[in-house]
Length: 109
Image 1 (tube, helix red, strand yellow):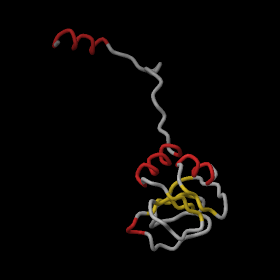
Image 2 (spheres, one colour):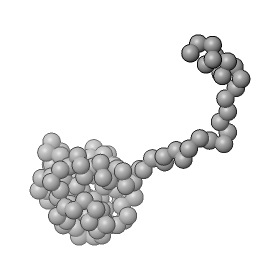
Image 3 (cartoon, one colour):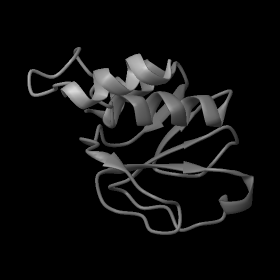
């Protein structure tokens, strides 16, 4: 997903030099190329890199930066976008209930 798309999704103020292709999320302490990093007040003095996108609710001097109003909300949106969990689509065709189970239900309920 392009950084410009993420900026639009978050509705933040974007300031980026390169519209990098973001492939995931990485930690502020273990930054990986082509990922997005969420920076809080405590980590604002880290070394910023050209091939990483940064999101924060404070002003940063980062090359690829999106400023948002609520950092936790922005993180939730991005994590949901990149790591959506697959929701079950009903009862599996491999599921079955044994006779013993129905006997137990009739006996004890």
